[in-house]
Length: 259
Ligand code: COA
Image (tube, rainbow, N blue to C red; front, side, top):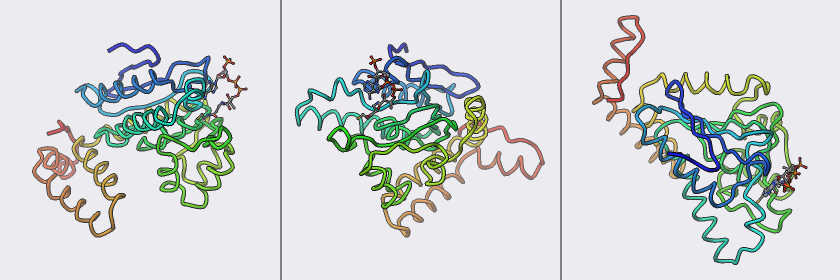
């Protein structure tokens, strides 16, 4: 598929989706959001893709929703826009293949929200993150008020949401908003290496971990552990479980097929 505002590349079973509006710091207009939905669907559908990196062209990851489109929205437009974006961001979160935000620069507003919807976040030392919506007279619309407290806790989330301040990568790492910080020049190679170590594992086991974490976070510990034990049992039916354990016992690398 071809895209107007994204680049979609596949190498070594890893798809890299690059938001490509560098002159607007990759601000998310409605068309780009729609393309992000098509791109994550393409990555999930394709047999030659096992994991997804999401990054931005130029000096920004994504500097938020496109303010020029928000400026004239009616209340119903705003509600619709938020719901459409939330549903698309959710597809990055529920993808059965690992998704990683590779935060090369500004990740503000919708950019920070999309990064939070990915399974893992890797940031350049130069990255800046924040939810500046209150400075524009709005609240986050793409899940920021919900995912930020889940990632960093209520107090730290409200501090970021209510000040609208930007924080640097080191502070984001201290808070747990990003999982790893690396030098800018090492960012993409590190992202490929970390994703490579994920996609070397059994695909159905990866999908099971993702679904157990997603469903478990929306319930209590006992229900969550039941979800986990169901997956633990279910995966015993897979050829990849037998292959993984046999390879360990035979002291060789496993050859997983996703079956
Ligand atoms: N929506 C629309 N356009 C945006 C944008 C956004 N969220 N963020 C940046 N841009 C555009 C700027 O308008 C500018 O376009 P122009 O060259 O046609 O004037 C271009 O991207 C470069 O941005 P600029 O502000 O000149 O860069 P800077 O280095 O001075 O500042 C930021 C960088 C990220 C601090 C600043 O662009 C900013 O605050 N952006 C908005 C962040 C935000 O509030 N996001 C949440 C939206 S809900």
